[in-house]
Length: 195
Image (cartoon, rainbow, N blue to C red; front, side, top):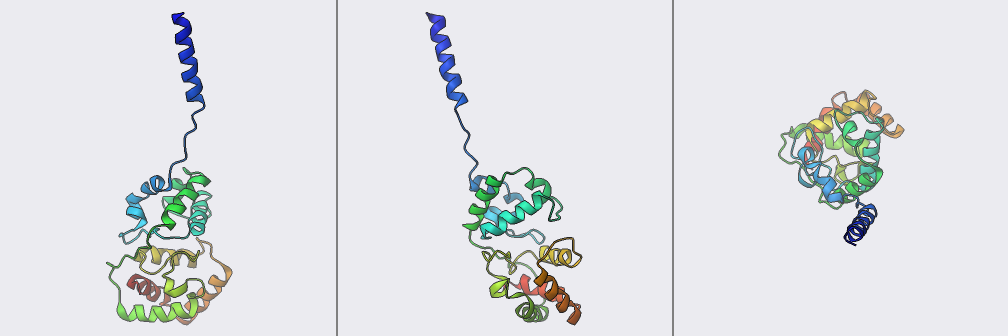
């Protein structure tokens, strides 16, 4: 009788454990793994790492998939992205989309270059990067107040074609650089100003 009770108990425990389905990690839990580089809740204060707080879900998911598939070059994000599932990307994106967009306003910038950069942005960039690049949920990423070196590196990556860009962006960038060879520096200063 005792053996029967033990066997029954073990069978019930095995069935209970076997039917246990682990819930997917929450977006906040996954988002916390990003804090070491991107700051608490995605609000980066570093000079080379972008803030991801407030980004649109679509932009975040597309970006993470591009890193995972090596379509977008990176120093470390490609390796990190490979460890996550599509569901993880969706959960993280939902979490970061709910956060208040963050501007790193502790960066130095040249006022004259920032003013010239604003004019360039309005002429060449504002159709996609609306309101001076301040809108985080326009599916084009937030530019205003983002990490200065990150912006500089991103523009260089677009220019040397190590990062894909839309055809219309490529045309506008080519036209802008033809007219102003110092355009990138002016744009970097403008976005660093957080205007």
